[in-house]
Picture 1 (cartoon, one colour):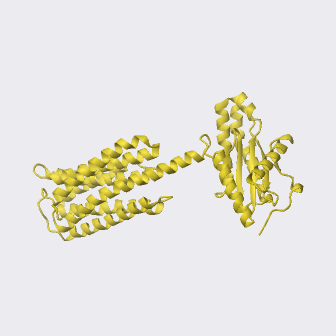
Picture 2: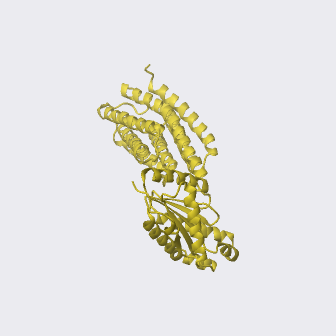
Amino acid sequence: MDFETTFIAQVITVIGFAVGLSIAVASGRYPYHIRNSLRAYAYGKLLLGSAFLIAGLRGGAAPELLVPLANGLGVAGLAMNYTSVRHLQNRPVRRLMPVAVGLAVALACSLLLLVGGISHVRILTSFATSAILLVIAFEVLVRYEDRGIPHYVTGLLSATLAVVYLVRMGAGMVQGEMPVDQMVDDRVERVTFQLSMLGTVMGAINYVLMASDEFNRELTKLAHTDGLTGSLNRRRLFELGEVEFRRARRHGRDLTVLVLDIDRFKAVNDRAGHPFGDRVIQAVADCCAAQIRREDSVGRIGGEEFAILLPETGVEAGRLLAERLRSAIERQLAQLGAEGGVTVTCSIGGVSLTREHSEFSDLMAQSDSALYDAKHAGRNQVRFYPAVALTPALHA
């Protein structure tokens, strides 16, 4: 079916408005960054719908104003879709960027109408549209972490439309001039509009699926992390501990577990107050995260108590890391402690995997025992479960 471009533009207008309004209404139920992403996407579709509305109905009075306005709104709407992808990834966003891009395109179109003609406008807007679509494809296909099928479909769809608009740009280069108040209605333009209509529908479906994936990841994160510190919660830490324990036993690899407790934390709360105590807990969690490797895991397993899983780490390396962590907390939290008139230190107990361990709970119990030894020995020190009670670690 070979519809006229004006009719296709009107259909895109209806679709753009329907999609934009629906997503804007539904966005309120989502977390902050997903909500911002959905709203940016919705506003982009509303701008796109407005652009095609003006393009489909232009004619009569002041077409020299309506052509730049339609193209500026369309490119600004597409730029809003780019910011929506950035929001969804929780990356920094320049909020005024879509406005700036739309204004630049509108002004450039106005100048081109004065010195050139409608074909020059076609070339410029096609190039701008292709560039933004390629940037969106790059964000989704390359930079987006934990990509799924909707992300690949969105990226490939954006890249395909970018090629279509490059073809449209080429058509503009060979096209003869025509009156400004008429819409270009050649074969390339009709195919471009038809594919844009298809892209609007498919893009909206896939974007909602992308937002749904992000929402599910957010729910998983909330279920696995401690609300105060962002560290793993007790349940998730123990789940990972069981996995690492079985892997280490199966392959004869090293595994060390550390348990850390903030010294005299009740006195910190009593003297400086519970809000200050929360700041101390957060600072200790941040210090732990900064000292461990990416493959290690830290979790808050009690009020002021943390556990750290150290895969592929033997007893000596575990001791060195524990001592480095103890020293870092004492040094880096000295200024924070001075604010509350307290001293912030920690005691650490550890144990490394041996043949005698049959369950992950054995490691936790023995690292707790070592922690109590550190507490009874005067605090602010590291103790490992007595090596004389155990045989050397199992290796393949």
